Image 1: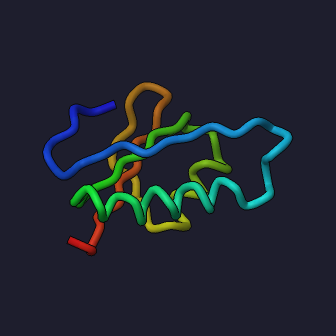
Image 2: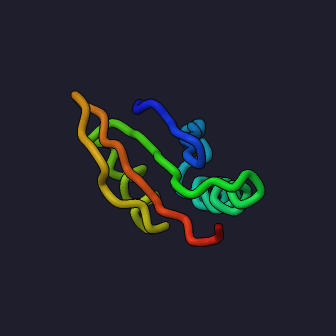
Length: 83
């Protein structure tokens, strides 16, 4: 992961396969995005394996865009407008 600057944060979570495809990931991600406002975060980063298509689809559906590719890790970025 990149070195984070003031106003930046990294989000991430992992769910047991028994809980996949139930909407929990979307709920968690939305809560983390909302919580970031309390901490004056302006940029969120998420990283995942470049072939983890479910995770990529989840974060891009919430507005994250590709930021960087490091080895097998895809770094995605979301610029927040609440600040």
